Image (cartoon, rainbow, N blue to C red; front, side, top):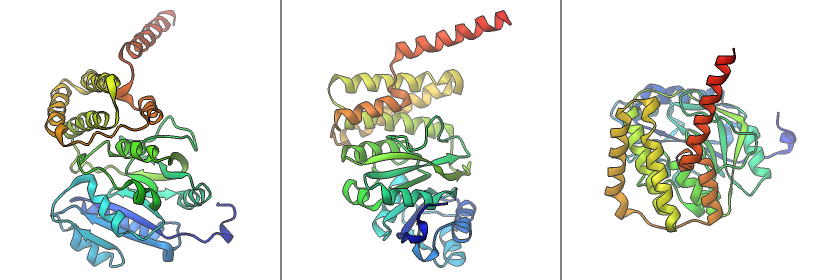
Length: 315
C-alpha cells in the first residue's frame, strides 16, 4: 500500500512494449495489463511498437485490443523500436516492457517513489523468471544498468538523453543507456518492490546470437565512452572474459565471441567517441562483469576451489 496515495494525483503512464513475431506472448502481456494492472485506467496509455512482425501480431492487436496504440514499422530495427514509443508517448513516465514480460505488483509504489525523488531518472524493477534476473541487489541501491524488459524511465530523461542506441540492435543496450543517463546527472535506482515477470519466450532467442551481440556491443560501449590507455585495457578484459565463458557454456562460445569481435571491427568506424565522466566510467567498471581485473579474479576463483576441496577432505 502506498502511503499518501489517497491524496496523490496519479500521473499519466505510458506502457511502451516492443514486439517481434511473438503474437501469443504479446497477447498475454496486453491481457494482463488491460485487465490486471493496478493503475488507474484513465491514467494509462499503452503503445506497442511492432518491429515488422509477419505472424499476424499487428492484426491481432488491432482486433482484440482496440484501445492500444500500435506503431507498425516496415523493418526490424531491434531495440531502437522502443524509441518510436518514446516519441509518441504522452506519459510523464514510460514503463518499458518486452513482449513477453508484465508487471505483477508494486507499480504504484514505483511511480509514487519517482514522483517524490525527482533526481531519479530510471527505476530498475525487480525481474523474476527467465535467465536475466536481478540478483544481488538491495532495495534503492544506486545502479548503472537495468534490465530492459522491466524499467520505468522518466520522460524528462528521454527528452534530455534521447532513446536507445540504434547501432546496438540487441543486448546490452541498458548499460549503454545507463552511461549516458548517469553522465547527465540523473540517478538509476533499483526498486525491489516493483516486480516484473519475464516469461522469456524461446522464440528468436539463441545462445549464438546472445554471445555474438553481447561481445560486439560490450566492446563498442567501451570504445565509445572510455578514453586513454584504460579503454584498451577494458576492451582486452571484455574480450578475455567473453572468451573464457566456454568453460561453462561450451567450446562453440569461443567462435561466437570471435565472431562478435569481428562484428565490432565492422561497426567501429561508425561509432561516435564521447567519453563520459570518470566517476561514471568507474561505476560501469564496478558493476559490469566483463570489466573485472583478470588476475585478481582468477586468483579468487582458484582460492575458492582450493578451499572447497579442503573442506570436502575434512568431511
